Length: 128
Image (cartoon, rainbow, N blue to C red; front, side, top):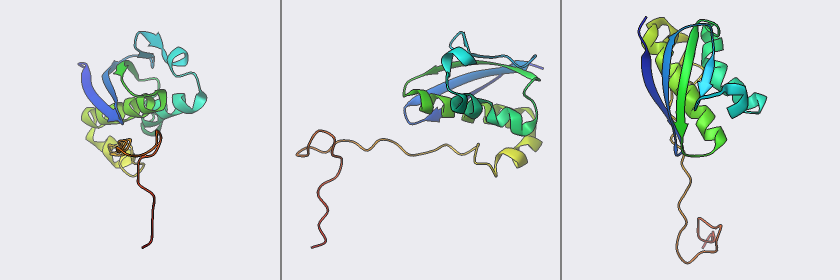
């Protein structure tokens, strides 16, 4: 099996992954997954696509991720892994699609509007 390269995005985070046959190690920015994504929730998000397909110990994943926050990065990695698994085997799509792992989340931070206070994004709501 050759190396499969895919990209995942979430907010301003971009993750590039390289998936190849191996024993299940996940390396994020040249660090182990436990050192980069410290909370169990983030680790679960990253491994979610692999566990749904039942391939936790079948592939090695090398990840380069930058931009955004730690949660956005974890979700970007999850999308990239899901895309790679679909590229590897088209039957995986039927498992991952209903879980929403192949959908790029389009939500972004709303920009700050001028004339508003520091944290405000929208003007004061008025019914009239």
